[in-house]
Length: 284
Ligand code: AMP
Image (tube, rainbow, N blue to C red; front, side):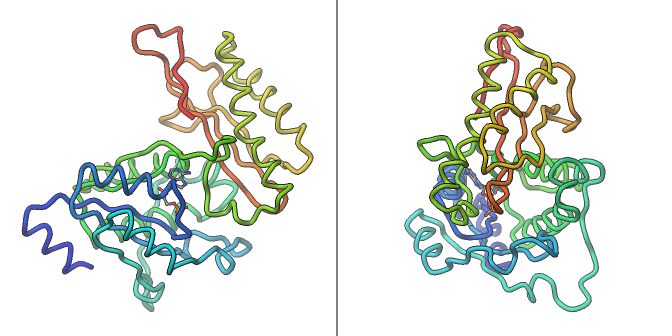
């Protein structure tokens, strides 16, 4: 992979990297499409990273669909696929980790200790191997994208991090490789994440800015779904990921909800309209 990327750099080509864990869906393919508009070659990686799964998490049963993934990537016009083995990425006596302090301990990091340290470490390694001009991540994983942007800045990386909007099913459910764990009833129940984001949006659109009031609306919508168990539902500052009291600057409504045994996340990004700061713009 290093040799391949070195060659592209020698030819002054613009390299784009799209890191994934496979089990590819239209969300992943939207990142590839975006990369293809800016870069050639576009390199995708598939690596189910053991270091970002907790001991009780789904590493062993995480969906692995390599054959159909590589077909999808080829059809999407990806120039190269990097699919290393865990033993190549983490050889014996591997000992160096990257951690974004503070930000990685909140919310997702609090519910999944060590998760983000695993994510930033593997992404740093992928960026070091490929040295792309651009690397593409999904805002569906809002905290992850924020952490990776921070890491790239803090470590003076020559890669520009591009964050892309989430792709959703027609009923609003954000595409996720983990959606295959849902049975038919749970799949129906899973729309509660999107529905609760919609309910927060309606409140905001009618003038509510108080975070506690918004949280109450989220909890009410989520609480009405018997298959749902809320891990967190928070309104946070989009920079610091600290809870806000009022929505007055760019914020995220962040959700992590168990549907049966499957843990799903979603978010709504809110920013003041630049021309009229009383008005908000919503990004699902
Ligand atoms: P994963 O394979 O789940 O690690 O995801 C690989 C990349 O795809 C990450 O940058 C994710 O944020 C992004 N991604 C996952 N789901 C979606 C989605 N529904 N829409 C857009 N990007 C996504």
